[in-house]
Image 1: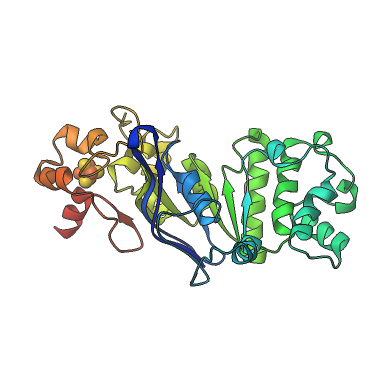
Image 2: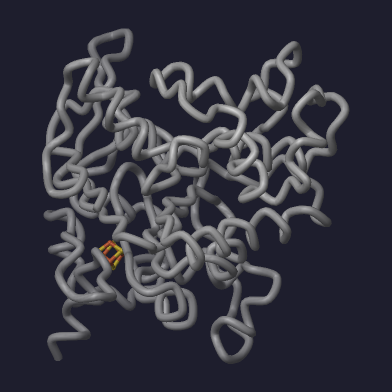
Length: 324
Ligand code: SF4
C-alpha cells in the first residue's frame, strides 16, 4: 500500500558538505500491517517518515501509495495526506491549548472540506480512539485531560479522516508507563478491527515486539535488516541488530538464553561523513573480533545490499554464511 524504492534525502551543509539522511531505502507497509522502523536517534528514521508523508522532498527514488507514485501537486498531496495520517510523539505539542477536543478533531475535516455529519464523524473518531462517551469530551481543553487521553485525541484527529495508514513517530515515548500499554493496545485494535496499517517509528525494540508484524532496523540512513518481528528479534542476523538486542534488559527472553552484551565502538557517525565500504564497519564487532576476516575486503570495498527474502540483512558476512 505504502512503499519507498531507493529513497534518498540529502541536505546541503555549510562548507559544501552533504548529509545523506536517507540513503537508498526500500520499505513497504502493507494493508492491515504494523511495521516498526527502529534505530538509534539520528539514524534517519524521522526524515524517512516525513518523506513518506510528503512533508520532505526526496532527492532520489520514489514514494508510492496504492502502487502509484506520489504526486507533487498540492491537490495530490492533500488527497494523499487524507489516506496517510501522522501521529506525533508529544500530544501536548500536537494540540492547540486554546482548541477544545471537538475543534481539534474537526480540524482535519474542515481542511479537507468534509462538511457533512461533522458532529457524528467527530464522535465516531473519539469513540474509536477509546474516548467514551465521546460527547463528554467535546468541550474539554487539552489541559483538562491526562497524557493518555491527549494522545487518544491526537489519534482521533487522524482517524476522523478514515485513513488507510498511520505514521506514528514514537507514539508513546512521552507518556507514563502506565498508559503506554493502553495506546499500543489501541493501535492493535485499530489494525484488527478496521484493517488500519501503521508505520511506527521507535527506538524501543520492546515496543516493536509488542505491536509490530514486521520490523526494519535503520542504521545511518539505510535499512540494514528487516523481516517478521519475531524472527528479527529472536534470530537477529546483522551485527548491528545483534548488538541492539544484546543490550535489552530482557535480551535472554528474546535470544533464548543470555547473550554477552555487545557495546558498540564509538558514536553513530554524522550523516555527512558516512564511512566508505560497509557503513557499519568502524563499529562492527565482527570486524573487531576478527570473525569477519574472510569477507573483510568486501566490508572495506562495498556497502552491502539488503538482499531478498522475508528476513534479510545487509551484511557480507551474513550473506557468506547463508551461501555456505
Ligand atoms: Fe560488519 Fe562486514 Fe557485515 Fe558490515 S558487512 S556489518 S563490516 S561484517
